[in-house]
Length: 401
Ligand code: NDP
Image (cartoon, rainbow, N blue to C red):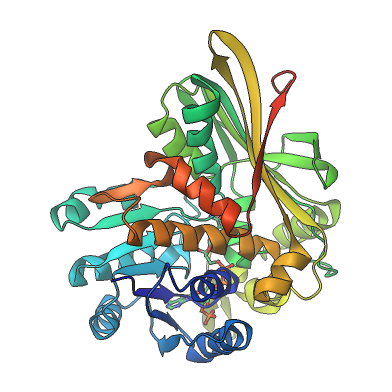
């Protein structure tokens, strides 16, 4: 039984559903449900046109546990794939427990009223999933997701111990807009404007948002400014690979993006505190999202490549060694295949792969799991087969910053 119910109909979902339909040997019936059914129908139509496959569609408010449970009872999937927003994670986990269905997502739960990124809320479900004999796989996107699997691949095959780990996320794409985000703007801006945090010698070190910058030359993209940020996979990686002494996450941003962001922040448009407007409460950041381009519409104009990977320094056979594992993804190729740009593609493909490995039993367990807790090899093989090939390079020396 390999039927799946996918929740959410944005860019990431569109890629995952296209890839599921393209690989009928890995998936049974695919049902796509979201807050607005017409968005599901548009994806279903594209899937039909591209691959001749039929997927079912439905409407559901994923914040309503009972409504989701009713839909699950109707569809009877083996697995629920949550590609809605981080706000829905806990409600969808509840619906899965209620109906006895496995769960997968790509981003950790966030409460709407505070930009707080941590796995605690979802790890707290460990006992309940375990007792129910169900599995929840957290963070099966690119970062978290592939970057977590790269770390375990390094640990399994390339280094005996990992001392330092740097995750480098570069989007060298240009969408031709003055200001737009490549995934959900509200989630993206909450993440980018949060203080930076990295792991060093057993504790978290916090620095102001976007205050630490380095230049790095990315393969097939070139030299880019990248900024130290907090990213959720750091929390689970230092838990599951406790030998790591320092773990950092870097993301590239262009000057134009940062200038717009600074202005929007200065005028209060990125705030998540409610304000009164014409007699009703609105959240400035949610209003901003409403006027920004939808990430799913950026595919047609985006050119260039993403380059995301892990640089790890440690020892191999007693000697110091630094390795770099990364993927380069082309925005125009991603669009040609699925109608979506590379940021959606690099998230939707790993969601599809994680789902396939849960359904075929290669990745199996009872409880709540992060990506690095499983054997990286089948996942790494599938990345090569399904559009996200990776490469390994040995660097002459550790990062000097
Ligand atoms: P989008 O905003 O494009 O899509 C989200 C979808 O969820 C929309 O279709 C939206 O509906 C739907 N949705 C929102 N609320 C509800 C609800 N209450 N009930 C049902 N459906 C709902 O986001 P993206 O596709 O860009 O991102 C999807 C997820 O992927 C996010 O959680 C994001 O954080 C994560 N992500 C993870 C990455 C990784 O590498 N791990 C990278 C990029 C993204 P509507 O269309 O009606 O608004």
